[in-house]
Image 1 (cartoon, one colour):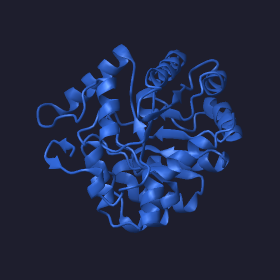
Image 2: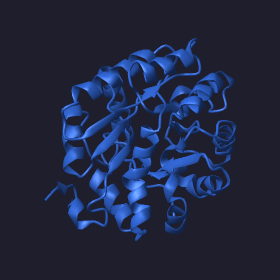
Image 3: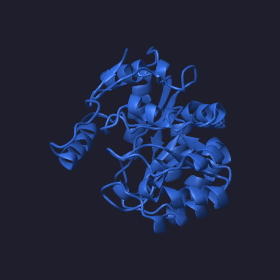
Amino acid sequence: MLQTVGLRITVHEMAINGMKVVDSHVHLLPGRLGEKVRAFFDAGIGSRLQLAYPNNHDYVVESLHREGVDAFWTLPYAHKSGVARGLNEASAATAQQFAEAPIQIIPGLTVHPGDDDAVTIVQDAVDSLALRVLKLHCSVGSFTIDDPQLKPVFAFANERRLPVIVHLGHNVNGRTEAEELPSIAKVSDDYPDVPMILAHCGHHSAPTALQLMREHPSLYADLTPVVSEFPDVDVESLEELSDRILFGTDAPNTTISVTKCLQWLSEMNLSRNALSSIVGENASRLTSQVAT
């Protein structure tokens, strides 16, 4: 039986028993970058909270496997121009490092709109490195999702049906404001074959995000918490939009373990079909349909 801080439960005691679980929001970041990101989170939470996992790739991979995860996406993100190629190569190397692990790692890629050869960086990552999901972090990279320099990137993603996860907004604390959401809805309409995934479901702006999902059929969202808080979602919306909702945790930089995230979702009393779609089927479908 898996033991986590303040909780003793196993996946076999949850409604998700027997379902494939894909964590669509994990960050196995390389070397010094991983250390800097961890230091940022440590400083942010202080002594009042404890992150659920150490900044150790081996530990995270083993922990996610023990907690019932069958596969996960590892997502790099470019905080400035000029770093995307190196991050993409590191992402591919991490997936290769754990190729024999009992859990599948689907490596992601990143790019920054300030990169001179942004679309080439993305194409090389997909075709040469076999990376399968693009991560854009607007607040960390100080850009907007409708930046004109991203148009060639989205055109390529549209051609290849490449999923794009977007951490929208400008707040350093990771929060997305409701007034920032229409920009991603507009981009999703402009590139309808891109599964455009709103990270953290907009967190406290989730009610607005869920309504936009009803109006924009290419807009998706993941249920990844922000540090210690789950997105503000309701059961009825998750049931209705279950074919475009993904499960995520933000491991290792989260205070909420995979087990607690799965328990939170499992206890919502969703239909079995909706729950199965959210915890794994949707993520598996999106990465399998990328044209190579």
